[in-house]
Image: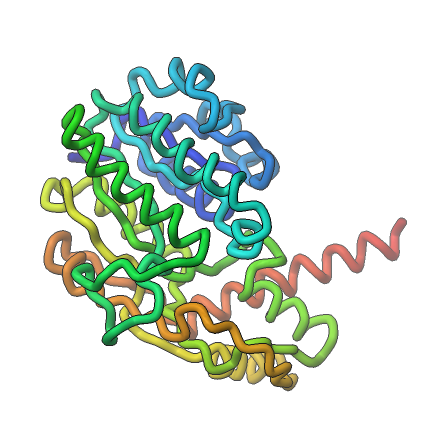
Length: 316
């Protein structure tokens, strides 16, 4: 399947990943419906695209509000979610409503779609029993965010059984890049280094698989276009693990600054490294932007942003 000229719905389109996906889909001549309730995502993230796609304000919890917008969509990328772990812990009813009930609403309306891409997370694996983690690893995630994503995965299978839903589950790893919200891990480290000249790190020993946003978007579209991924669950990442401390070291070298360990451990999923060999086998996809290149581009984005804000403050 070629995504060109397909009618494609992206839920959570106002977020970092959603807006990046919309931008790439537009560049590939897809007819994009960008759907978001804009409670977390921002319309500003789609400002440069507003003449090239249809922006819809809708909430996945409102099935009637979704119905008309999904009726003739051929491909659906379901990204809408409460994905902040702390928010999910503080307000689990909200996380459940959006991530589980909202997903159920969406899937129930997608029986005619050629493909639904459900974006899950490597957090579903919990504390790994082995590394790198392949798709056969047990789903040991137990914190609220992970539990809602596990539920979403099983909902895909239930709707496949009930109404022959054509889906692919994507277990996404930590994604970073220009445009990500400042409270996310990578932007917060970079901005602190740029403005405070020292970076505070809570969990330097935690190992993550950090992927640049362009790699992630390319992977998602390859997955949607490939018949070999139909009904499959695939990991999407780099296959390379790095500790938060080592990652911060790279930032510090580029910014000529230092970091300090706050010694506030996070016991959840201390090591997450994706085995991406299945996705490579099914689609031929591989990440093209290296960690070094991605980090350099991300730093320059936030450096320019801060310099622009500083200049604006001086003028005002």
